[in-house]
Length: 310
Image (tube, rainbow, N blue to C red):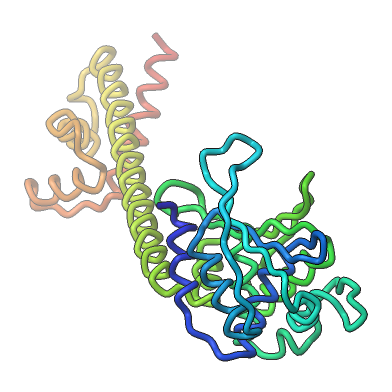
């Protein structure tokens, strides 16, 4: 079962009062319903969703409906579930804000349909039930989308989403408009808004896991980079020492420089900080990382001069 299906199966169990139920039904019918021969048809691959819609219609309008199954024309293995509504069609379409009192299509629903936050949440639930999907955070990038046919409906739904500061955006597609959210935190907020509480817990668990894993990877990469840098620095210093030993007697070096040279050869894999601590401990003469680095700069300069001369 996909993550989207899990979300939809969760939110269809939410109980509602009448005004909230009308808002949910409005979001669904306005983005899914179509009229043919004075009948209203609603469709879904998910029979559980249409059972929810069927119950809302019966409870609100005392109209019984039947769910039929039909094969897809595109050779999909899934069956398309269809509700056909024959009675009180005009009244239902006007009540959910699909048509006006003259049975003309409304490009956006009346304000009373989404008059408060609970109604807005319900309308967004209705839209998601018929046109929404969210990628499983385990297997994909974070992505929520709603596919809307009509331009003004798309703008209306986007505005509802952004009431909650979700940063929803619209893309034009060949078959309509896609409203989408890419930010993980915003998608989590959206799930809270449509009251998919179990989905929120799952989404947040996966998101926290990803964040922890990414942080660990960054730390590992950082540690590896530091190790590589230590090895590179030590290798360069050993090369400089070889040049000096090849072209002159080490005994001619001053005591501090000769000491740095000898300890580097003795501890070739140590970082400058570690080497400064080792020298301080073994000689009982404290030296800082900065002081030791200054000695190796002198060794490098001497090696360069000897190489040029020879």
